[in-house]
Length: 265
Ligand code: HEC
Ligand code: HEC
Image 1 (spheres, rainbow, N blue to C red):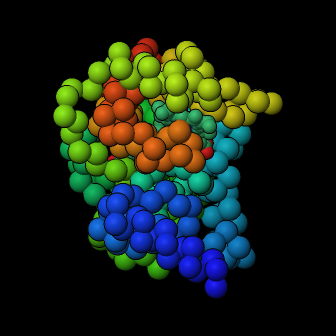
Image 2: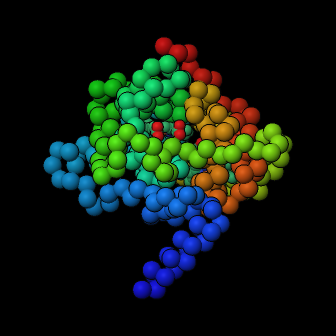
């Protein structure tokens, strides 16, 4: 009863302030649109489909361990697709499944979901792409398929992809961004963007340098990175930076050294 009331008050606060609420479960988008709730972990089915889905989830959350051959940096898929690919405005897998195949200007063709995943391996993971019919991609596709069960197909759902942040009133400024970074980000990601490893696993992912995403990645686009940061960073304090700070810190992060974009094959 009390829980319900508290939730109601939160909903009201979200709606009246016209902000995006950063709650882990069902959320509310700016226009009051409900955010899709993916099926719970407990509902992964038994049998061979369940095995494939669970394998996909393992690859997604511990990519180096389960698909290390294809990974060229210290990130996992979950480093950017937060909460195991479930979080709204962090390109959730439930928002992706139903909108592929899809035309992308980037490679000027209609991409299957598997081909889209290959892109993240090459650029965001600075690695090599597993074949579309490889066990790795089959498991990841199954994981995305399962997570989107019950979601409408062919429409962009609220919370899918990243937030399209309104253009800033002044151009993004890396010098102001450096101050934001040092105050709000360096504690976890390190003063030199290097992140932190713990027992061979990534505790805090690097945001620039040789172990980060390369210049072909979506996050090398300042606007895309700003939208992600606005909604998701500092971790668990999404929507606490001003829009301008999100733009500035994104410009700073993207102005730092990182691997070059690999030649297009
Ligand atoms: C450095 C951050 C980063 C990492 C790591 C990363 N991705 Fe992505 N991914 C992105 C961005 C940015 C997009 C584009 C989202 C958009 O356009 O709104 C994206 C898009 C996608 C999409 C399409 C989503 C959509 O809504 O169109 C899928 C599927 C995907 N990634 C899967 C993966 C998989 C699988 C891995 C691990 C092998 C991975 N990603 C690793 C940043 C990342
Ligand atoms: C409390 C610790 C913490 C703080 C503070 C924090 N982050 Fe993160 N950040 C994380 C973690 C942890 C992840 C990866 C999430 C996962 O793997 O589940 C992440 C992921 C990211 C990513 C995507 C992965 C990558 O390495 O490229 C970016 C970009 C990012 N953070 C930028 C920032 C920026 C900019 C700030 C400051 C505004 C910030 N973070 C503040 C913990 C933090």
